[in-house]
Amino acid sequence: MTTFINNSLFTIQPYWLGRTWVFDAPNLGVMAEPFVAGTNIVLTQLAQTRLGIEPSEGAKFQLIFSAQGFPGLHLSFRRQEPEFNGYWYLSEAQDWAWFSPAMTSFFSNGYPEELYLQVLR
Image (cartoon, helix red, strand yellow):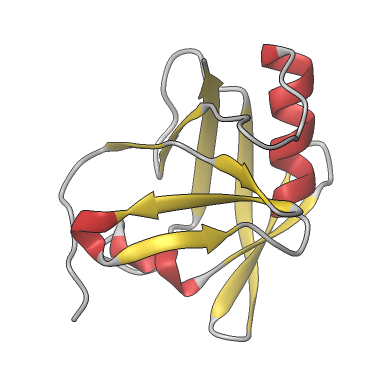
């Protein structure tokens, strides 16, 4: 069952598990959902440059994301093409990132055309 949340801004807490960042959203039935295919690299770069956090066991941060821009955002993406039930996004810095089907749990219209991110401690 897919549950949609009608918020403008969403917050999750990625944490390092094994060799990638993952997140939980228990209210949506999502546990240890991994960020893969470029998304883990983008999040590592943001965590390192913006927060001084290195990817290692116990590392975690807050990730705020939205389909609309908001004050203090660090990175924006534009939807490109579907693959494996997810979507590829391209950042303004030309970084590619694949977002999994778990994203549709947050957005009632499926994958947003644009995606905006901010990282916080």
